[in-house]
Length: 153
Image 1 (cartoon, rainbow, N blue to C red):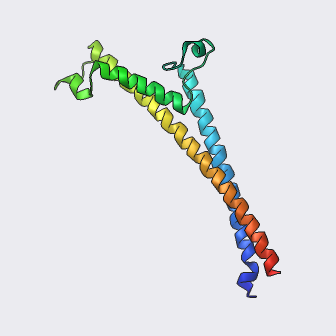
Image 2 (image 1 turned 90 degrees about the vertical axis):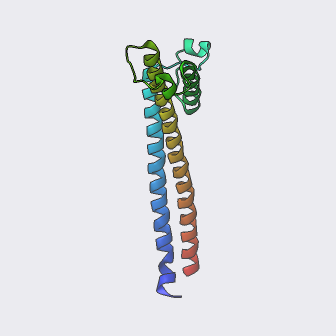
């Protein structure tokens, strides 16, 4: 048996340890970012799309699905003012003293905030998922490396 084959198990186990470490980092980062997003959204106290009983208990928009639903609701209301920004301006310029223009701009701002929040939750979930995959890969590499060690002995 060659020296490379004899010590291949060390490289495989080392890759497994690296995968485990990276997996843990990804999971911690994903959970941390998700918690941060949830806290940030709770501070805003947005209740659009949440039933009144939940609002009475203090629930607010603070998850991916709730942010998407609230963003969709705001979009629907905003399009009730004007289908598009171009239609709102009708070839003119934005006038902050025009209540219709101001309401449209505020709705657009809130809609974007909610969709970015949903995107943030999605990225955090992807981090957690990738971390779990890395943990599984790390365990598989570790087991494979130990099996190679036994075989090389």
